[in-house]
Length: 463
Image (cartoon, rainbow, N blue to C red; front, side, top):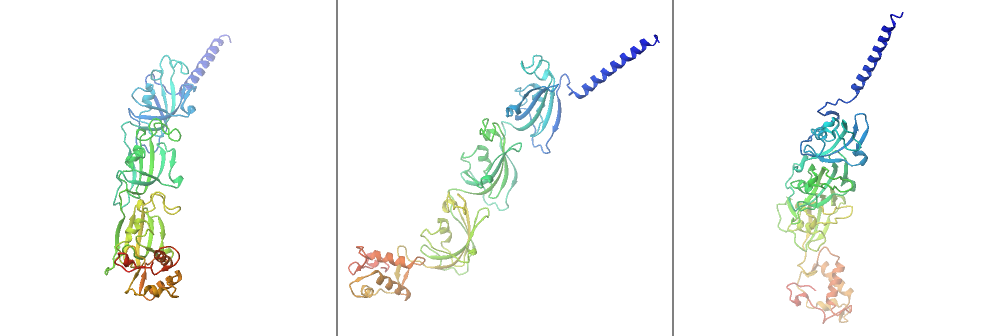
């Protein structure tokens, strides 16, 4: 038996050695491989679309957790709730991170493991990172740009009918959704249910948007990606937009105009006989369909089953509609585009017309009644009676009362001997006529006061 004891001890010793070797091998398999002179990169998430990857001299914003090989955390941007922002590949970072960030896409995640020679070397950082420590960084890239970048326009949807594009100095109304390059939302005009309204090419908006809104059509949609030096720079806005952030705007152009624009009138139908055309003072009746430039319906007379009736040239409609109705024949149809300064201006009409909106009217002239010469509310169709005052003075008391005056004028109109300006309340016109004759304002007209307008250096007969 004593002969076998040394052999048994030897077997047990070998078993212990074999067991320890297995443990060491197991630990080695589960530790990140750390070549002595290179980094090791594990991609834990790669987005499906990668328009652009990090290159030397790009500026990046990323979050990270930094640990030692044994998992000890030494730093994290997440705890500071702020990204780490820096240039890549030009020595602003430790060598291992400078190399490890190259080729990354926005939203990509990587675990970058680096040897001490590419980290903090023999001395460490003097606090949390010991000398000769290998480092592990868990990184997610939020955005990147290059200082030489301009804006990028993508996802353009241009309407087939685009007769005009924006130029510097135009006033544009547009909707937008704004986000960061990683998709983080920061603002939207839709949430306020109001377009963003501004001049373009004049510095009223950030430089990248100023550029991105030039050359667009009404109804166009486009995505504008703006680097920080053309947006809010290194400072950001202090709230929703971080410093050095790339911005992405999805925009929809609602309408635009220029302050020098005039009313645009297009005749869509004209009757063969068109001898009599509308002019200032005429009473006109017309139908219309009204909409915004993006085809949003505003109003229509057809919905009410009656025409819209006005006297031209007396400010009963917006100036652009006055323009659109001039020199028009009965039965004629027109397409009228009215810029806001000739429509409802910056204020618009509450719950009906947005401020600074371009208006579109499709109109049809149904009826017209010729107006009186400018400055007249009543004219005679026949020669004036030489006994005009006495005909008015029914009670022969040598003065004309308001009721006598009104009855007489209405009788002349009914008999076709005279004509009141069309489109106005006849009683208000007659009251004004009486006031003009009642020169001392005592409520009655004497023969001495009474005069025809023809006697006051006019070529027309009017009271």
